[in-house]
Each structure stands twice: as C-alpha cells, then as structure tokens.
Image 1 (cartoon, one colour):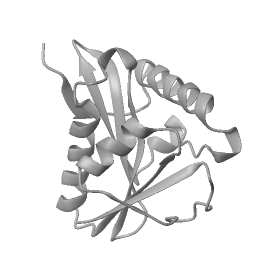
Image 2 (cartoon, rainbow, N blue to C red):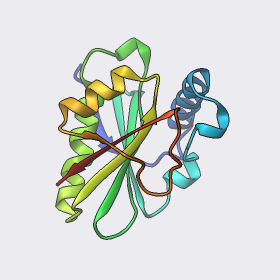
Image 3 (cartoon, rainbow, N blue to C red):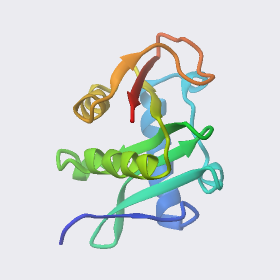
Image 4 (cartoon, rainbow, N blue to C red):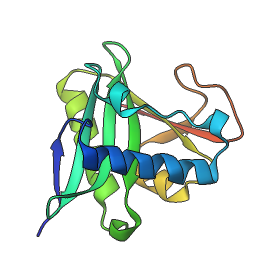
Length: 151
C-alpha cells in the first residue's frame, strides 16, 4: 500500500505516540535546553497545520507548518520512523508544507534543526532550503542549524 500524507489533528493517540518518539529521539542528540519542541496541544493550535504520513493506517511520519505572521512560516516537528526512512517521506511532507505555505501567500519558510541531523539537512537542502543565521527568536547555538527558503 502507498504512503498517504494528509492534514490531521495531532490530538490522536497514535500521533501523540509518534511525537513522543520524535521527542525522545531529539533528546538523545541534543541537550534538553536546546530542544524547541511544540507539544501536541501547541501543534493543534490554529496557527499550525500538521501533516501525518501513514502506511496501511499506521502513523509513521509527521511534519507541520507553523505560521508566525502573514509572510513567514516555520517547518516544525519533522520526523519519520526508522522503519520507513529512505523512502522520501520527509521530502514529501516538506513539499506539502511548502505547497500550503505558497497557497496561503507566505513569502518565506524557516526552520531550526539540530547540529547532529545530517539526514534532515539533506532533505531540506534538496528541497531548496539554504543555511542561514538564527531565525525567529531562536538563540544562536552550537546545537542548532538554521535554514530558510524564499517562496
């Protein structure tokens, strides 16, 4: 069965479990005070749209668009379960985030990721993002890598 990606509420048990897995993975690589997680409750806010990737009904990946103002959106909560990596799921979610941002008239997408996430860097760079200095209100930190893309 093909992977399906759709806008869903994060307030589902299987999505909560996926986000918990994401948080645990990030905490293995980055000190807690340099992890900038959105909770599932924050992800369910009106300013955020969550995309869930499913394989035969099982939640196996996620990503979100968080709007900061009328022109800037942020790519957040990107994750694919290890069992499904290498299948371009992250790239497809980023594509969906960008498509929505363009439809809404946003002019720029930004993101913060960790300094130990080379697979994520590849996804973003292949999608046309460029490294930049700190974005939004993130501190400049050795633990963070920042990206931006003009739309």
